[in-house]
Length: 456
Image (cartoon, rainbow, N blue to C red; front, side, top):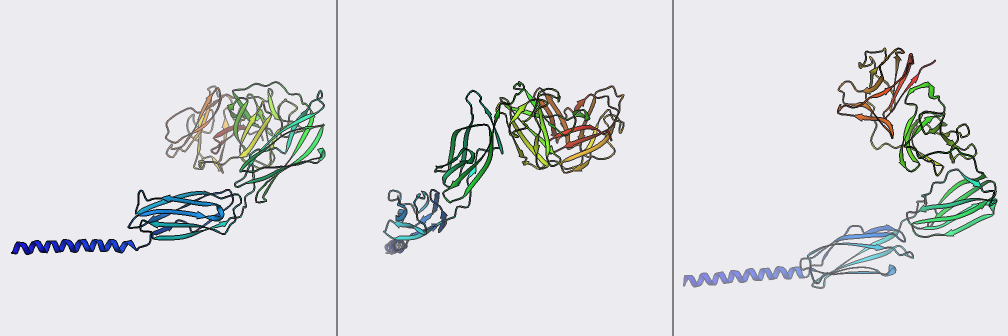
């Protein structure tokens, strides 16, 4: 009898648990799905791609997620009946129609397996276009065109490329002296204008205006200069080129006057320099001499790079600062830009060392640290005129030898590099019988050094 009662009790408890479980599930059947939306208002514009994301959940399981916006022609359904997940993360990328009206709502509807629904609206609003188009083709202020006497014309091949963050509308070219005023419709986020324009001799101002769909404009002005072809000396694809300060004399320097430009491609070279004043001027040479091939710009067109010693004039840099420079000898072009350093150049202490100076014993160090102005370090030393060995110099932080400027040289140029572990390496060597004061300058921004005579 006791065993029978125990068995009946166990059955009763099992039935109670089953009823409780069923009752719990029944309680969940009438709970609407949960719906999370990452953003309930999205600012956008025609042609944009918008990401709508969030999470849906339900104890019983999800049947579908629907995203719809009748005004934009959007009706996206995620059919989940085959999986019936209890949690579903949705990411939907919609393309805003070109003709979209705004202050519309994107309706998100979640439906569970029991037919219960949850809905939310995402407001779609317009964000104003404040960005102007960007010129991908950088035109110089003056463009040289050679006049062909046989054809009796000078031809300018224009290939202007431009972009916009949203949608372009038009590009307009105006050349008043040629009675040209042409507007071309463009669309999309990138465009170009290709034209060949024939000129007579003279100077022709040109205005190019790119407009986007929002009415923003970018205007570029240039002048096409058409003249008889200027004579130029022959040149080669040199292994290295050199950039020099045109306002100073090579003979005033014992070392470092010619800064190397690295060969980057056929007839193309890239280098760095420091302009220490306004209207700083530079030339480019094919070797460490001012008497050979000398590249500057035409005295008539300041954008035309040429090789003609005694004829060309220097490239002028308006503002002081650090610059990168690119030249293309074959295309007769150059470009200059202000340098932005990826890491902050060294500005700690530096002391000069070397051999051939009377201020300290060979391979000793100067009694005073080099004076610093920004990234440029200077020191005045006395060079021994009767010194017979090869002269050498370098700079270092002598407190711990944790920073040393060392030198490299090859057929492709030369330069300085930073040794931060005292791993060893070369220092700069030069020959000179000069007897007197010199100023040594190190520049840690562009890693270059010079030795110049002090004659005053």
